[in-house]
Image 1 (tube, rainbow, N blue to C red):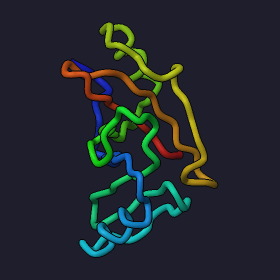
Image 2: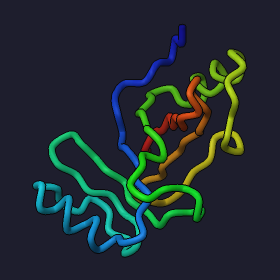
Image 3: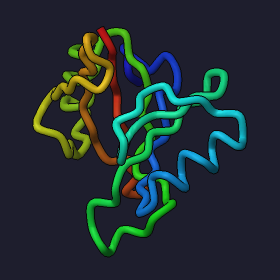
Image 4: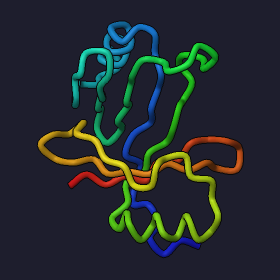
Length: 124
């Protein structure tokens, strides 16, 4: 069992071919724009966060959950544990982006037993 386990769900990611319709749909459900990057962004309602972005591959169905992201306080240690346990990594180690600029979003991705993508992340 992981010592550096997740502390909560960060977001659920949904590919889309129509970002405007996606924003409108979730805003109608009570979500507000947390990050608005035009064709990609994040919507929030309470503690529920949905990330949306353009579908990356034609064979990937729109609307399906792409990955489940979980917050993790000790990202580097959790990464080491996941590697040691032999899980299949699908990121290039711990990566980062500026989605929450000026804060940095650090993360890594690996596969679950049914092929689901799991992301551990930390915003600092």
